[in-house]
Image (cartoon, rainbow, N blue to C red; front, side, top):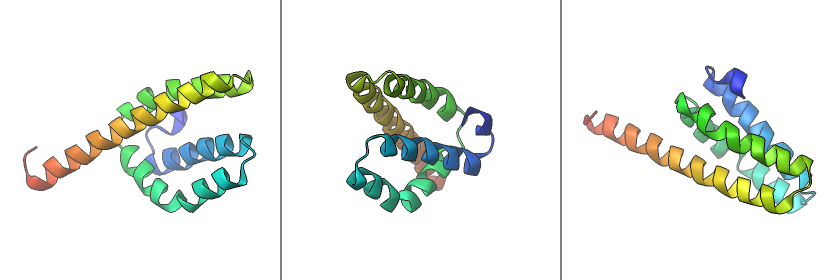
Length: 108
């Protein structure tokens, strides 16, 4: 993902791959199915958000932490790292939406 930082469509695909692989590690068909059913919507969000340079710097540490916890079978650590990651992702999405709204309204 870090190598694809300058290419939002590729970044979005790689980010989706990270999340899909993580869902597969749960061995939960329901979780995998839910994620798969949202891929179209998530791809559009990821591509839009991926256009902002700070995204990689902000999400990469939590991706790494999640992977480290999964590799060491630290379920509590992985859960906490994913919560942090999702909070950061939501924060970024809100910032992007606010910027787009300001741009549309001509206040930027």
